[in-house]
Length: 248
Ligand code: NAP
Picture 1 (cartoon, rainbow, N blue to C red):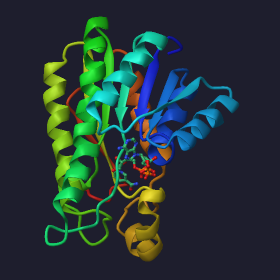
Picture 2 (cartoon, rainbow, N blue to C red):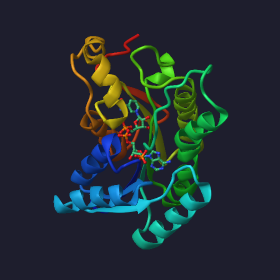
Picture 3 (cartoon, rainbow, N blue to C red):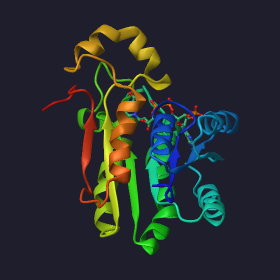
């Protein structure tokens, strides 16, 4: 894996940082992408300090032109990017009765268009190299629509479900050398869920058959499998990583 490079969005903290650390531990060079320059620089420094190859890149994933420019600069400097993890995201707790048009657009722009922007930038290089892996971080919210124990509501469920359709379409369009899969995390302890977990911890943990909250490492482990297994014979799949919270 030492000749491979992975790019992870939303990687200054939380699940994205956990994925970055896990892939770097597997030997890949990692590019940590986030919109907060100081935070993502500190995250990359942490991994470098642990002896891993990590570098930061600052961009808002929702900005198409900026993503294309940053991606071109990275590829000119580092060569091909073999693994893309679309992870950047925000929560949005407003229902259809409360949400504004601006709030709706922001969620779709970050979760769904952000993934499109990075796929548009990196998929041509993966196809040309006849090798690539894309992992989209969706949510169990895409199946359930949210609910009382969930942080986010309609805009988030719509964006995350859109990501699953995009995963399946790209798996077809980019075959046979690029594998595209999605992970749906359940309740993972990060800044994004801290307030909800703080308020409803016992009920949330009680809803998880495996009896604990998820961690970024739980997600990172599955990403590492999807990103590094050779040869790849899984594509267009959606894997729930939720401790059994939404067994159906
Ligand atoms: P987090 O701790 O809030 O981290 C998300 C990171 O993404 C933050 O550093 C954030 O930066 C960054 N980000 C947000 N919008 C961005 C943009 N437009 N451009 C670049 N970076 C951006 O969240 P997390 O819990 O790790 O979640 C990571 C992903 O997993 C998200 O897609 C989330 O929807 C999904 N997920 C999480 C859970 C969970 O239980 N935690 C469950 C299911 C799915 P800022 O600080 O500037 O916002």
